[in-house]
Image 1 (cartoon, helix red, strand yellow):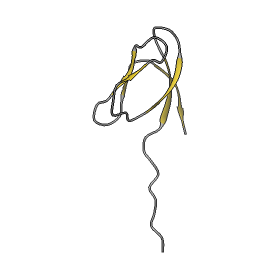
Image 2 (cartoon, rainbow, N blue to C red):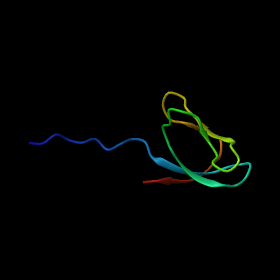
Image 3 (cartoon, rainbow, N blue to C red):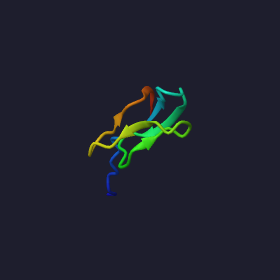
Image 4 (spheres, one colour):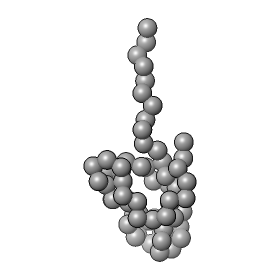
Length: 62
């Protein structure tokens, strides 16, 4: 019998920057601060588990 592979508990999140309205996909459990690729504003910060998302969450991707 083979090993059971656990499904990941974290997801990718589609966010919108509150400053420039750029939409960006980020990982739900980030280890570093994530900045907007257009204006540089912080979108998410690590907390040791799930990220603290500072932008607007548009969608959680499967």
